[in-house]
Image (cartoon, rainbow over all chains, first blue to last red; front, side):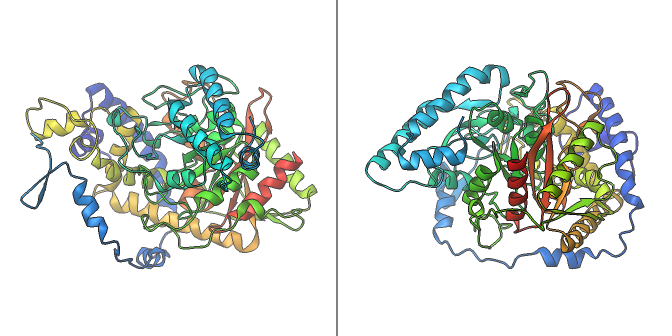
Length: 92
Length: 471
């Protein structure tokens, strides 16, 4: 497991979460503790677990959408429409 | 306050009006909420109007629903059309639900009266209700202590007699652990039993709606009203829902109760003693105690934190101010826009999103996330094997009783361990119920938990019902 020193800052940046230098230092320490604790999972022998088979066992068959009014309901939820398109707000 | 069962029966028979039941609830909330902070918003006019409409229907001779006139609180992450739903976060400060959750529709169809939304840990992340943007909830048993979490407001509201029932959600023990801390009953059914349509997602493979009540029979009635297939939730099970409240047996002679090895070592001595006494009580009622082995269950808590944080980092990506949530003004560029928009998240939420992203990083994915998912499968197999030998499994609900507000502030791991005995239920998709089993020397409630297999909730309800009666 890679937990380099700037981990909290790097992941905060990836997830677009701003951290103050104080928060970064605090999270760094707490994350080191947490991942140190989580490391115990590596001692478990999981060689007998085939996740592909497990995943299939839990999947429910596809259920095609049969409610034809759904599309209309969704389109009508937009406040503005123009040229057969739903308008969304400007970001910047 | 009367129980769910008593209120519904009394309103249906005309011995009590729904208006009287709701007025009593509103009065209690007015009196106690300023100290306890269990409700973050109450809708008195609307609740009374609805209660009067129920009474009017009864006087016309109409048959009322199973929860006629029962005042109910709903956790602040459950959508009720036209009402605010904030997950107790500044991120959703002014968000109004555009539709109602299936569980809300079911409550209304059963003639329950929703009186308000209850406090919770922000986005359901926490075990003490101290991460709420609305401030902490105070445990009604001792105001200086936490009520547990994340459904702390719901548990406190029931324990204080503000409402006879409240809805919570349970991702790692968030219904059962606060039930234990506050001395009430909390049940989480098996995964897929209750629709999550209209419930704000935290961890999609673990989230489940649960119920908090003052007694087991009421929990059974609430559960049978809420369970059932829902096409709007792709994880909902297409299975018949038994009438749980009518399935209690005359006794529990011959019931096989499993005691998992290794679950009782790191317990507070007083809690250990209470659990031992509870096991003896079950034995005296005719139950058979058997030791079961769940060797991977000790990995549940780290497994749970990795999987749920990873899923949270994905589920909470939508709160970026563009799709949902707070929108900052005057950002210089797109990066800054996102960062400012996500600034209202509280510390615990930020931390879990960052932890989840760390676990999902390509360098960590296999050793961390994937390993946790594989261990989860081994935990599921352990419990499935154990349920071949026993009907229910008995554990403590929490390793401690309610701790003081502000405790463990600098040691989040200590708070995470509050879920030590409950997160298996979510990791394994099991049904679990917490029922009070006495008090410690300080008078704080201790909870006992029964686990049962998916689609056999009646077994844990029955065990809890007989235990409650005998206590």
